[in-house]
Image 1 (cartoon, rainbow, N blue to C red):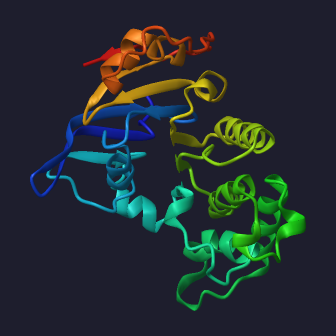
Image 2 (cartoon, rainbow, N blue to C red):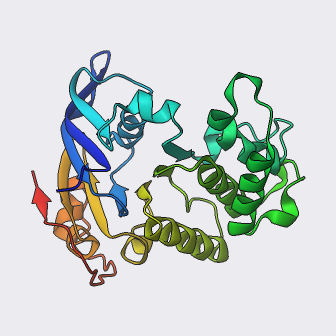
Image 3 (spheres, helix red, strand yellow):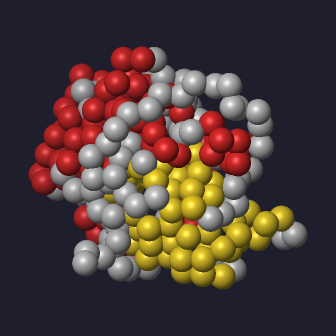
Length: 259
């Protein structure tokens, strides 16, 4: 049996008196794309931070390919595509500079780019179709191009696990299709991808599986099953029973898990 790409075991996190995660457990196999679905305040961002080793849980444990999150992050094994509002788009960095950040773990203390670093950055930019924009200041890109620049950073980094926080927010349909294609290609190459999104209509085409989160994992299974209105009602606490969300069959469906 292969080692899980992401193993979150009974993780609990408090911010003071506020309970962000309550014994949350999640197992993702390698080379899969999983959609993370939940309302604002459900713990999605906290789960990302725990997986990246940015915060230590009050209880439980996290392993990334059998290693601690902090070690995996030091070794460049985790790539992250943030929400747009988390980034200072006025900072004087070019697109090339942003993608080169993914190579820092390969450069040692000098941060001096080698021929191999430059080749990896050029290849990543070409792969996300941003080669002609390499010298442009990062804030001058469109919403979809900015997302692709951070995906390119993860590609250049050689990340085997990638976390994306609302990658389709503020992007046009062409960029959404491009990002979806890129993520499917990365998964085919062996990368494990966890995507936090409110765009439920995009899940069946993008994801192999989906997770409903409300401080703990309520359900984990194929998107067409997870997106059933009665299940969404559990996560969002809303009357969604009359909404029609797309359903689609997926190969290699994971065993359904419910809490």
